[in-house]
Image (cartoon, rainbow, N blue to C red; front, side, top):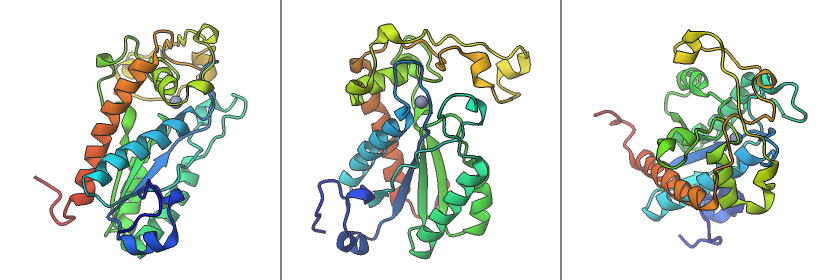
Length: 258
Ligand SMILES: [Zn+2]
């Protein structure tokens, strides 16, 4: 195929003739959120991460021969717990379900039977939606992945990051340094935990009312972040996600289990 763009796996940069004739095997839907990230990272942090990780992962998969196409990133995520943070734009799970159903309807009708949602935001959870939509679209292979869980953060960072901490700050220092305020302005990202042992142990769950947990909106200390750490982590994450995209794109849908 004669590509008109240098990134023929990014739908927003492609043109109709090449898209019409490409025969994609796999669509990737990056999904972010628009929310405060401590005092030093921009509201679009999850969107920037989703864009960059999707693009690089898809590039790696494409270069190995996988026909993947990255759809535009959905910019709003579930922010029900951040209801009182200025301009954190909440998109309810039921709205996400509608967007997902409409998107899958297009893919299914046009014979692109694989979709991976590349999730960039902890409040988004697509698993229940995928179960329900899988019944409605039985030809589709539907998957979601959380890139931020793909690697053991301890191998890359000193302090655990839940939100706007060392991992995200390092990534942004590498990807968009001009949008990061000086680290001296950042809060320490200290956060309270639920008082219930069951929730601390991880087998019970309740939503955190964000501003009762953290003062600066961050959860995780960002102050040891660096662009070098971000670069190393970015390449490791995209290699892993890229491998997953390649494997899914190449897989025979009648033979998914070993
Ligand atoms: Zn984030």
